[in-house]
Structure formats: C-alpha cells, structure tokens
Length: 204
Image (cartoon, rainbow, N blue to C red):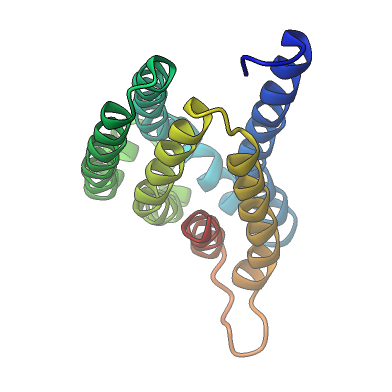
C-alpha cells in the first residue's frame, strides 16, 4: 500500500470490500426469495420479523472486528511484529468470547424479545425458530469478521472477499435443498433457510 499509484492501490483494496458488503446482504435476500415463493407469506414474514434483531446482534460483533483491525493496522504500520502477533492473538480470543456471549443471548432471548416486539402469533414460532438457529451462527460470523478485519489490516482485502463469495454460493446451493427438501432430506422451511445460512457461514 506504500508503493505505486495511490489511487490505483486504494481502488484495488476497496473494491473487494464494496462488492463483499453487497454479497453479505444477499444471504437474507436469498432466504427471503426462496421462502417467499415456495413456502408462503407467513414464513416470509417470520424471516422479515427477525431482520432487525439479526442486524443488531451481527453489528455488535462486526463493530468489534473493525476496532480489532485498527489496532492491528497501527502495529503493522509501526513495523512492530511482536505487538502485531500479540494483537492478533488477543483479538481472536476477544472476538470468540464476545461472539459466544451474543449467540447465547440471541438464542435464549429469542422468544421473549419477539413477544415484546408484539410479533404476530401466527408467525411467532417460525420467527423464534429462525432467530435461534441464526443466533448460533453469530459465532461463525464473529470469527469470519474478526479474521477478515485482521487480514484487511495487513493489506489483504481479496481473501475475505473470496471467502464471502464461497459462503454465498454455498448458501444458494443449500437453501433450496434444506428449505424445500430433496430426497431423504425433509422440507425444513424457515428452519432450513436459517440452517443453510449458518452452515455457509461455518464453511467460510
């Protein structure tokens, strides 16, 4: 990042970030499209009801990853390899612990929060099931974001982009299989959509 044309370097670094953010939004979009077209309006409403809560839980983890990236980037810029290693090691511990805590909170409080938000009883059970499964995936999302933040701090924005692309492709393949059922795999509906997303995030 310190050698060559600055504008070209910035574009090369930021383009994977921008496209990757777009792909990140496609996870829930793919779920919604398939569920809405093949399962029904109530199932689609259940997923839509949880979007704001998912964003809340994921944003806390993602924000922590940004802070981690800043610290690692500073030490890397100073050329202090020992502190870079220490920062990376501590960061992994912090992001893992925080992700597990958020996952537990999301799983345990899924029903009380949705009831508090006056969720329609018709879609409540599906919404709770979806939120609980997705909450488990917070651990995977946290780890991905933490490692991605570290890599970007070291000047590598392509690897997180490729991982994100693999995750999205996996989600798109698993969604119809788990939501609609194929062969011996039963139709899981809303739970299938959440399971596909979590599995894709775990693979990444």
